[in-house]
Image 1 (cartoon, rainbow, N blue to C red):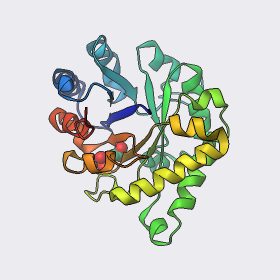
Image 2: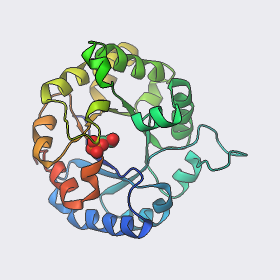
Image 3: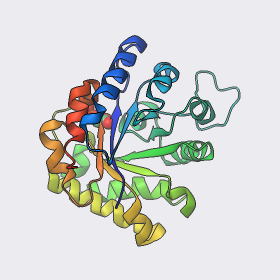
Length: 253
Ligand code: PGA
């Protein structure tokens, strides 16, 4: 059985004060979601130390939205994986399409970031996803497989055990357009086959693959019912605790 995961990507939303209140709400409502679902919240950097204290001893896990590709040193404005690990961050989102688009993060950079994360005991949530024009040109499967393959081929089998993958079609992020359950399943099966090609069936069957892109309470259950969809990476709907928990309820107890 793969770990079922629902992770909230808060992006650049909420002040630290608002974020702390949101974290408290998520903690308070978390008992209403199935016990076997791992709940992760990923607030902005400024919130992490305070939210880390709030989630300690609860069932909520903490993730960051980025980390540096270097260990330490003269990199003004960067935050290292070691700093994140030190305050109790367990996960880090890497390769999100917004980072790929606005910050030019491609495979080589992502691999360095993943090495930093894993070297500090922080588990990467590696994102991939095609643009609409790529899907329309029937290139979506090749594009996504290349995104995944170019990074995971640089990992050891032991490192791969710590990696969570997330498929987020760019055309579905923040647009209200969701991939159909069939589109998600088709892509997740391809991603799993790519993992199998490099690390074998056992690892492929153990790697959680999350879906992201306008996932909400009304469509979560259908998406999560797909055999290769192991949960969700939630943007907009993670900013309201009741929606975030309702999405986790898309998994049956
Ligand atoms: P969305 O974002 O749920 O707002 O579409 C998902 C994501 O970008 O992780």
